[in-house]
Length: 252
Image (cartoon, rainbow, N blue to C red):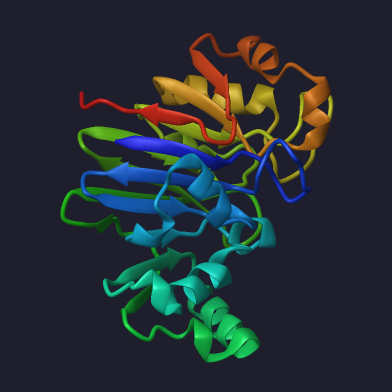
């Protein structure tokens, strides 16, 4: 499994960090988790073939996580793209209404012309493909908001989306190879609905994950050492996400 951090930032524009987006190559398929504004261009920069996405998984409906959804659907209808294979669009309840509202705003250019679009409102049951498995858990953020556990090629990745401290995500991420947690602010600035290093580190410690990656970084964090703040609680492998970062997960 290959994981690419397409965007490691948040809703505040930052020249060093794009809006949230994680790309995952599992087997022969390509997946995106969230599509913040500018994600398509950032995928091109990172060498991720956005035109080949098989599925998109949305964590929640804040604009910094869905801003490039309409541009993606628009691009797939442009003849130059030549997309003719299906796309799965998955997320919490309300994603069908989101799509309907986008079509109402932007018109028929978002309605597939040469490919099929399958929209799935996810519930508790796992979602499975030919060579992958997806599980969900509620996040402590807006309602609804999900975290995802993705398994393929004998490896596992958990992506929190936006969240505060979450027992459900701790359970979801138990024993995972890679835990990607939002960490919006330093310990000195605690904001409801978001994680700080102390909370992210405690969640990682309890999951027993092999590697922790901090993402969804607000600009104020540039003045703090988030890794050092994590290390006060968690002594495992922890890194600060950067746009374009690639992580290869080997089979167990």
